[in-house]
Amino acid sequence: MSAATPSTPTGKPANGSAKSNDLEIKDAHLIFQSAWDELEENVGRENLRFPKEIILLGGAPGAGKGTNTAFIAKARGLTCPPVVISALLDSPEAKRLKDAGAMVGDREVISLLLTELMKPAYRDGVILDGFPRTRVQVECLKMLVDKMHQLRREFFGTPLGMHFRQPTIHIMVRFVDEKESIARQLKRGRETREHNEEVLRSGVGTLAEDRPTDHDEALAQRRYRVFKEQTWDALQSLKEIFHYHFINAQGSFNEVEQNILNELEYQSTLELDPQTVDRLRGVPVASEIVVHARQELVKRLDGYELEQPALFAKVVNFIEHKIVPIVLRHAISGSAHINTEDTTLDDPNALAMLIDVFSERGYHATVDLHKIEVPEKVDLKTGQISCRMKKVFRIQIRFQGSEIRRG
Image (cartoon, rainbow, N blue to C red; front, top):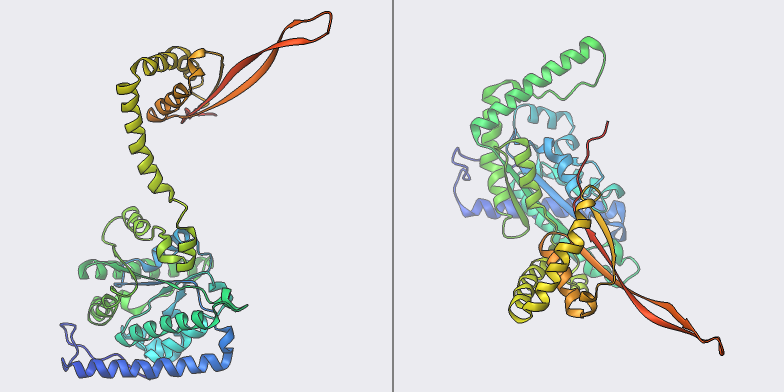
């Protein structure tokens, strides 16, 4: 079992040499290959089904990783529970190390994680809470993603191809400073102890995990410094490889959630298979056409005023005196339907102007032309009926209606 390289208080390897980093990488290759070979032997290469999306949730102790996990899952449409690395490592030796604020061996972490990711519940995506935490684990992560791409290439175009999708990897790092981290850890310890005491007293509820480090300021401080010296540098090294999200967790709960939403906004070019992106390239993205449409609307309205002022004035006058009074009577419902035979709208340009004016004012307007044959006279000798064509413009105006308090 390989342990992380010992660190100095500055966060640099104890010997400060590049040689130690080379040894770490070599250790990572040995650790990963051993765990991979074991997995492939147990499962079968064609059954190595990894999640489409992996969100790696890291951060300082007390940064709220557990608090926001459900929110992150909802933002990404994930229904499976997160994989909490500390929960996977439940051996007595691992528990002893965690209770002391230290870290467990990389070999155990990688082996358990690879096996866990095979579960069908994680096929569409999964959140990994607490991985990677060391440089060795970072290298193992890179090798895992390389293997996922290799499997996709290998099975592409085969009946199994849909099971080996383009992986999307997000690195989400939540950060608080040392003072805030220690304060939050100790607060969590007090709240956990109070909760457990109430459960034991009343017999109602479930006991929460009570970490020894949450009751000792020195141990809480050590947990934070271990994070800064080992995990922080390890996570920073992934910036140039995967989608990297830095979340400032110092603010209020709502502020942090908004930061998360901003970071996880869907971007199809980053998540879809490149061939799918090419296939969809001709269909414009809604947000892009909205911006373009607004610019074009402004240009058209100015063009009406400069190039067709008489017709434009006539249309605006028709809207103000014939349509707006009806719209005002429907302010509560937010929807008005108007039928009119006004000849102002006979000009196709007038229809365009009407729709554009309402769009600029924040309404959504549609106009349908209905032609109706109306009998005018009958030839008594032949019985032939002569009709005139009646044009009825059906205008629908929709907008945000009024909310009435009821009850």
